[in-house]
Amino acid sequence: SAVISQKPSRDICQRGTSLTIQCQVDSQVTMMFWYRQQPGQSLTLIATANQGSEATYESGFVIDKFPISRPNLTFSTLTVSNMSPEDSSIYLCSVRWAGSNTGELFFGEGSRLTVL
Amino acid sequence: QKEVEQNSGPLSVPEGAIASLNCTYSDRVSQSFFWYRQYSGKSPELIMSIYSNGDKEDGRFTAQLNKASQYVSLLIRDSQPSDSATYLCAVMNYGGSQGNLIFGKGTKLSVKP
Image 1 (tube, helix red, strand yellow):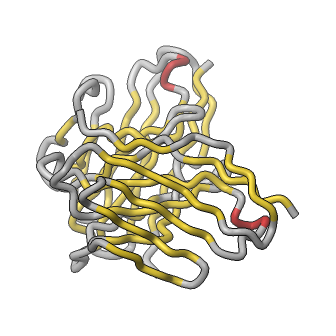
Image 2 (cartoon, chains in turn purple, blue):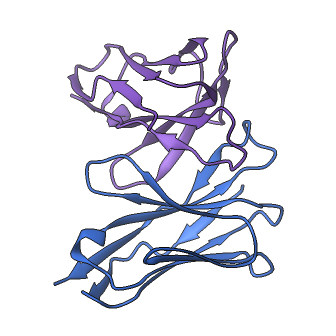
């Protein structure tokens, strides 16, 4: 089956630093999304990663804090900028496979960030 | 604000029993519904999708949809300790960001041996 690879899988970061998370898939996808899951909470959509153009951000999320790139159909990055302890979360890459008409989303293994 | 509501639990059932997980949603135009299972420390895993009113069965899992009542449920028959996880209900967000999914907070299920 198709694979969604995220890295890093986990990291411990210092306040004020930035970290870039990568998402690589091995098959064609139509949509790539970035979600956040704060401790004990459900998934919240950060943004839709658009190929070759600026990401579409949800209310409460801004490009300066969460810059996203998607240079091609199978790769995207999410940067968490100027981190604070409130950014400690699991960040999840999610995709909809090309040719799917069911709306199903599939998730990478997630990147667990702890900000000290 | 489109919402998906679930009882957070924990829901505790004995091994072999039927576990019933419920979900309501606010957006009346929603057409696509999903159940994900999330083990502790892992990412969500799709287990069922349902699009039409009625029941859809897949092995020990049955999803039920009632669009008039804006209600989705998941039944797990012959529950096993390995079913212990958090179950997330998700609804496709029509009109939102390219059809993303809106998730409930999840119901934690514990199956006791």
